[in-house]
Length: 204
Image (tube, rainbow, N blue to C red; front, side, top):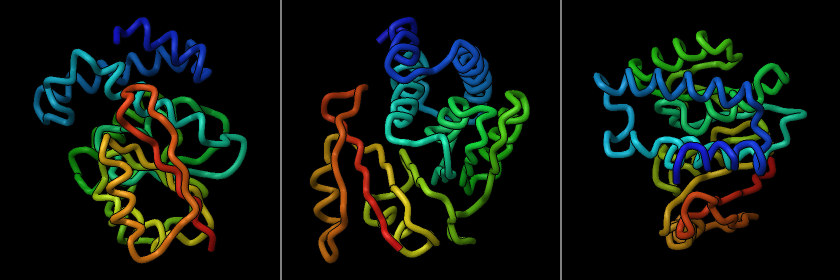
């Protein structure tokens, strides 16, 4: 999918503004430069970054109420999906925390957040503290069983867990829910017909 087509989807379906798109372009330029040294994303996906990374992350805005609450992104990496969601919400008062254990990636996220005037918290190892947000999102953090464990044991309040998963989502979910059942649903990804978005409601 070409960049212009993705931008149309961001505008029409996901309500990203012109300013959001401008910020995303800055984000992409900075990421491509950093990627020459650090390999934050696979080099093979750089030419398809709008579709593979930006749109894949941005589609999660459909499942989040930005009028209240806060969000934690586990294993933020180069900012997917947390930073893209923070861009959408820029200056609207919705609080975003990015958890990333790599010091190099945290430095990149801090520099980019400052450049884009984003109000985000950038934290280290998620296991070092309790999570107190209404939403937890992750894209490439850990296996589903581990994500479920974090969401169940470290989160302090009732929350919605939103996970981007590939074509093995159903199988992974069966393994993760083998011992205990949770209230969940599947949503189709708009970037890949075989990928799914898993949304789990945790009650405290």
